[in-house]
Structures are given as structure tokens and as C-alpha cells.
Image (cartoon, rainbow, N blue to C red; front, side, top):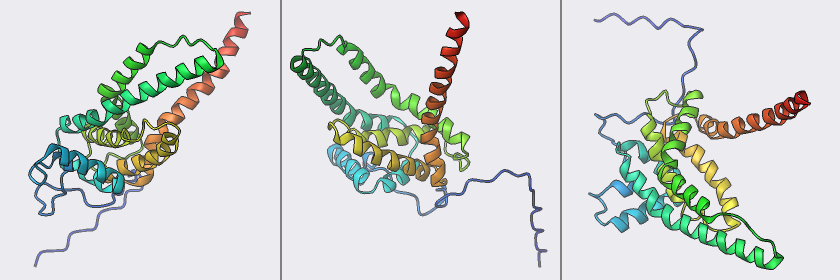
Length: 234
């Protein structure tokens, strides 16, 4: 008989490891996770059917959609899905914003000097480049909180952001209602981020709240330092 292996020595200086909600999918596992419907051409041949199945899954079972994101590697399909919903949504948002600005200007007689091209350029940047830049920073914040110890890379975070934002674009253009929906989207986004990376839920919330805390600290620091510097000049 083989001797029993010695138990590992307890190391009090070892950092805490991130727990995961379920075992990480392995390439040799027989129970491979299902693909995102948008990328599952074998099961759903039609592109429109795949698009609708992904949108429906995002609203009915966002955690199920998040759990399927790690099963693929290319980022192009996720980015294309984000474009299919983001282009009409941002177009409607810009049109409604311009109509509201014109109505307020004619009703109250207030002349507006806002340049529509600035809004268009901002929308184009947020749609075509935003998922990659935002996903990179989000992955950095998740790494800071120890949420990437299960092997999830930056590409996984970017793919997840593309699918999550693509689903939210479907309702993000609705005035007033988008505020309440945005709160629910943030909760689902934080939980889905942790689900995609197979880590603790609180780490997903910490990663999404870190940019807010950083901006608050910068704002408070600027509010304190700028008056002090102006006072020293005088």
C-alpha cells in the first residue's frame, strides 16, 4: 500500500484565496458549459434567432448568461452583439435628447449652445472603444480585489461587458425609466461579473464601486486643494 501523503503545513502568512461559486470549467470536462446563444450557430442557425435568444436570456436569466461567457474566447462576436443593440439605442437617445433640448429652449426661451457633434463623438467613442477601455479598467479593479485568481483574463471581462451593455442598451434609451433600470442593471452587472469569473459576489460589487470611490476621492481632494492653492497665491 502507498503511504498516506502528509497534510499541508498551515501558513499563517498566505493571503486569502478567492472562493468560487462553482468549479471552473476545464477543457477535459464532459459537462462543458453551454455557449452564449449569440455564438451557438450549431444549435440556433439563424442570426436573428440567436440575437433574440441572447437578449431574452439576458433579461430572464442574467446569471445564466454570465455563466456562459467564459465558454468562448474570441471577443469579436461579443463586440458585434454590443453594436447591434448599441447603435439604434444611442441613436434614439441622441434624437430624444435633441428634441428635449429644443422643447426646453422654445418653452422657456433659453438659448442652448450645446454642440450636437460633441454628443455624437462621445456616443461613437463609448460604443466602439468604450467596451475595451471600460473592460480593461474593470478587470484592473477586479484584480485589485482578488477576483481574478480563478484564471479569468482581461478578454473575459471585456466579453462580459459587451454582452451586459448590449442587453442594457435595449432599455437604456427610455427616459426616466432608465434611471431605475440602471440601478437594477448595476446590481445584475456586479453579480454577473463575479459569476463569469467564478469568484465571490462581493468582489464583483467592490470592483464596480471602486471607480465611484476613486472619483469621489479625487473630487474631495480637488475641493480641498484648489481653494488652498488659490489662497496661497493671494
